[in-house]
View 1 (cartoon, rainbow, N blue to C red):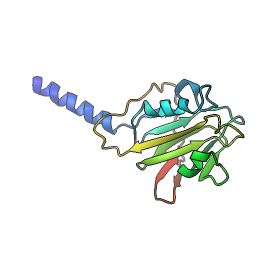
View 2: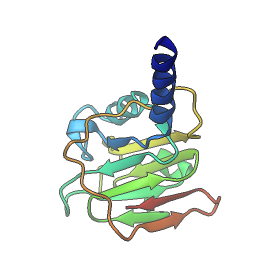
View 3: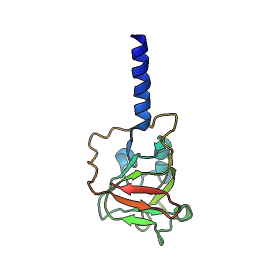
View 4: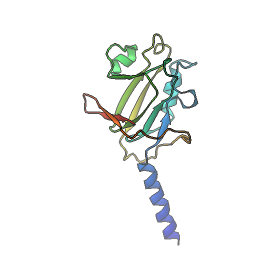
Length: 159
């Protein structure tokens, strides 16, 4: 009996480390110009251990924000002139590779006011499970995923 409980507990731990977690960027704040500047999204990202296959949901009012993937260099200076890609409506992404991804809002002044986030995804084999915030109202994944592959062969897909 004790052995069966130990095996069940071990199996549960293994399942937790392989399940994809879902994160709303900024939690309840969402993706917007943060009231406390850039520290808001730095603090948000530091709360979680993002793993390959996890999802990021960028929730915002269409027409008031966008989500733009940029290089690290452009992230640091809030330059959206040459984005890797840009979406004008809320989006949900699944990350397929371990790397750091840099997102900004390209609307005038938004990035400079702190609407930017760098998110690092570790390999799925990470020894600690990724904490998952509540996602009871998460939208279902789209049936036709759009896959983006960066020049460094780092990929993720919009679902």
